[in-house]
Length: 390
Ligand SMILES: Cc1cc2nc3c(=O)[nH]c(=O)nc-3n(C[C@H](O)[C@H](O)[C@H](O)COP(=O)(O)OP(=O)(O)OC[C@H]3O[C@@H](n4cnc5c(N)ncnc54)[C@H](O)[C@@H]3O)c2cc1C
Image (cartoon, rainbow, N blue to C red; front, side, top):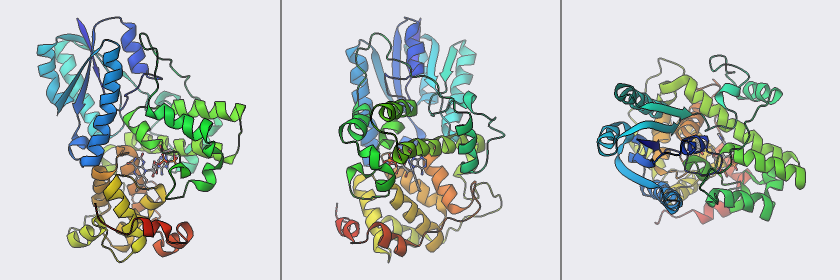
């Protein structure tokens, strides 16, 4: 009998527990890359990025003799056909954190239970594994600083899992990006000072696209950072990249804990109802036609490239929520369509946080004029993205 590997956001050879465990069985394995509910909502740029990333990984698998299938159906809708065309007795997948993804897992588990298929799933999407947290999910500190401090006091990070046989190489654009940012340019040494920059490629690590398709695990970044710190330099900047990876974990566990609530207008505060009267205002934001040139520049960059810096994301989100008074979930959904580094837990978690309906009840309102003066003092960024032209 065969094994099915359900590919999700774990398109990598190195540090992939699901892959290592699955190949240890030495049975015929078929890899399946299905559609997801979120990818159906993706715009052209995000779709292309995910497809290109999948195609490269597919080549890597095929070169090593594996069969890879792709389907336009979501996995729960496809599994029954798959079982008929390629009967299998075990299924492997990597667990996700967000609501829709977990609903898919439950549907798939139900099908497998009915057909007597053994399911093996692994938790490897975060830096700290769920079971290694120094608290239960229920007792997870509400505020990031408390979460981080507790974790740092009892830091436990699983070792890296090496590339399984038959793979002889595991490199991809994600591992190349680490090499570039750490070992080649040493840009990491100035990360804390440059991370708010909006123009230069090396202002921040740009690791998010690779983390989010699964080309890289957070642990791979962590162990490279440790190596860099012991061999080259350890400073506040090297620490800060680790600090940001803890923010990532925080939003993933937050999403796991609060489930559907992080996708609702009311967030964690029941009773807040959406305001549906602002479609035109919302459109002006999407189309970069607001009275604020700093906001428009960021939206132009997003619309044309699928990218926006963290500083930009914070400002345009705050502007939509607190200056224009539009429902924050509309903005989050727009980002879901456009961002090619889209991640459900990080996107919706950050938007919810800025709306003041998440873990921190204080509304995060940015003074966008002041922000523009601080982060774009000469107006270079606004000049670069002043036009809406495709
Ligand atoms: C409104 C809003 C929406 C966002 N949507 C997404 C999204 O869909 N996908 C996504 O990956 N990030 C999202 N972020 C977080 C952050 O903006 C990006 O991770 C970051 O800009 C990616 O660039 P980088 O890899 O160069 O970041 P770096 O500054 O180099 O950080 C390194 C890594 O740390 C993590 N990280 C950094 N900032 C945050 C943060 N605020 N929250 C959680 N983790 C963080 C990311 O994994 C990032 O790749 C969002 C932030 C905001 C304010």
